[in-house]
Length: 177
Image 1 (spheres, rainbow, N blue to C red):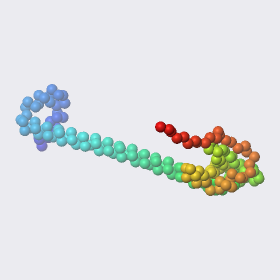
Image 2: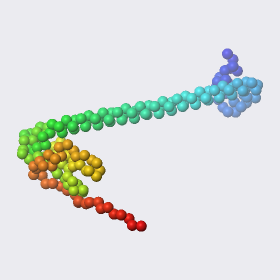
Image 3: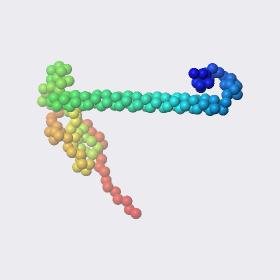
Image 4: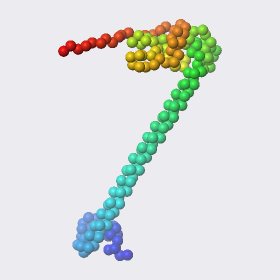
């Protein structure tokens, strides 16, 4: 195959622009058009390669984000399962012997290790200081059901001081026109 038959060899043999332009003077219109077509094809191939690399990069980023999301979801699921198991095992009482009693929720005191907190709307919620379990009063206006066990938890004896916040009630006002 001659150099005239292979356009990439023609462009590689003369590296400078003036040399390239001077070389065009020696070629026929057919040769120039053939080289132009070859260069355009090479440009399209390079554009396609760049686009494929960009698409591959985007896909890789998406896959990495998806893998990260799945790992986080797994960690949250495991955390919630562990918390639920801890809360179900906890007897919510004070006392016990050793750190294991505190960590495992195996209190032996007659008092409960709970906090009763009064919310601004006057309702209470109860929080176990050992396992973090919460019991909440329902709200009929907002259609929120009472947490199972709230009625029992609010009545458990504790020597912890209840906490609270400023109580307020919403008042309906009607605009007059």
